[in-house]
Length: 210
Image (tube, rainbow, N blue to C red; front, top):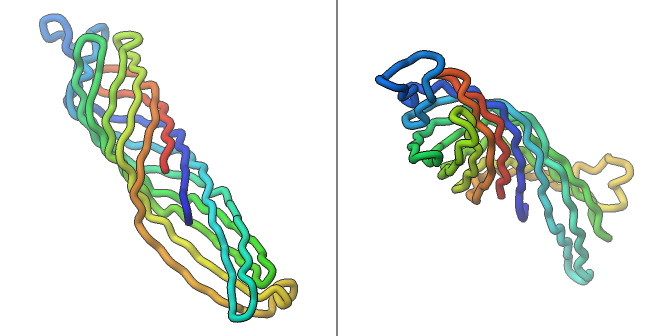
């Protein structure tokens, strides 16, 4: 696998235990402004879509090598949780956040050279990120932000190859192999966060990860 690019749209409902309202004279009334400073935890669910590419090369003694480039979509649902801490300075909010997502994203690619046909299935089992966040308060309870940092993901791969004469009959088991590995990369994204009351926030977010 040369690369995996995944996009995520997630609806997130964090519970904030420390980012409570800092109202006038410590008021906790519904009209008090949201503090935006403190520790928060949350859960999320969404969808991911991505693409993998692979370059297959086949060679044998006395025969010129042949190759083919194939790609596949890797899509599926995801869900997990996040933990972060934010600070507020005037209308700016910045902080750090980590999250972990379980994923059921998978995809299948097939390709044939002059000698062989191959089928490769990919699965993104889980991924995690560690990111910085920087946002601007459009309203006292509405935060527009960008985020970026490191990403890790566990990718599983299953490979099957058969020779071209037997590929049409599907009677040849051919070569079968499997592999799984954890890969590291980067992630960028952004979102919109709304404070519903003193303890709850609602978030819509998009990630682009490689």
